[in-house]
Image: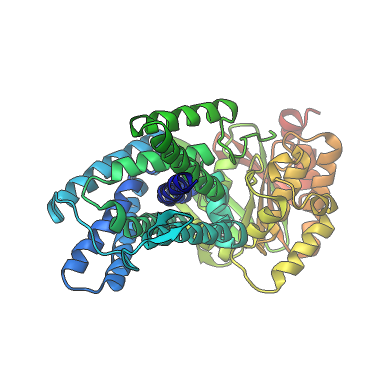
Length: 290
Length: 233
């Protein structure tokens, strides 16, 4: 029983990380139908910037806030310099641009930062809590509640605020959105800033546990993307559930079978789900009456 | 109210508007009729700023808006109900209407919403449904109601009768006719020339990117050339 509980804690923690990355995907996808493959780089930038600001003598909390702001600025720059000039290009071309941007950001990170592995101290110490014979680190709770808080904020943004609905309208029909008086360029800028900011928050939260280096983005982006697809692309709830599901499958497979099989088990489950529900667990089917 | 002079526009290297002049006075219903491909939709897209104008000027309420961004034109009171309705199919009926009033956050939005529901009771009934689930006629009503939520002084309507059953066409045109009582000036683009001219004050006939005939709507209905080419009489 305590063994199961231990796997559960580890699955929820890892799952919350994937959910945070997946939530970042959701926003840009909702605004533009583009899957931003530079999302993992936002996570890396959040962690790495915090490390370097912290080592430069800035206290941890202000360093993290500054890192999140800096990453948001990088997100806005990505939109202004790479996505906006390609206006009118197909979604596939834009996705390829984001892949290029992710390689560029990774390369720049090697130069601006370095190629070493870094970490900074956990927010609330390293002393684990013991629950039913299993242990959980305080940083895990930060990650889990961080993911839940961001999910809640995004859910509110997209369902209750007019700006959130303007984001959805812009994705659905950009010309019609302009006819409503929506400044669609601003909506895109806002989406990239929010998405990058959420990625950076994920990076700040996980670095004390998983460490960070210039290349942590690739693996996180892949798992976060899988989580978003599993839950239903563009749905905050889908990102949360998809992320937790993948984290859980990984932890259980690693615990009860072998950690060698954890990725295989994850992708078998994803394939099986997408066979039955091609739009993901919470995805809306794309049926329009014409 | 709205004045277009020498408007040219192109898609890539192909010019589709070759110098269009159109004038709309306050309170008028003016229609632009013409065959498919005459450039009517491009004209409205230029007026809203969705499509760039290559040359010419667009003056709205005395201001040159030729280079103004689309959202500023809406802010100044120029709204459009676009061709093919283009409602937001991923949002509910009510959310579509609220986005029509995107520029406003005052108490009047609630009143305007109630007015829209009074004008189209079917939309009130289906307010929480996804807009993509509405029938073609209901989507058209939603597109017009959504444009009115922007509190326009001048409403551009692109082919509101397209694809609708004859009984619905009459219903939609009644709505357009009633814009007068709301103090909204209307520029109506239609392929259904007879229906459009019968409710309009004045009309323009467009052919391959140019205005070829213009005049009071009743005269145009009586004009032999138009009767033969567009009215099938």
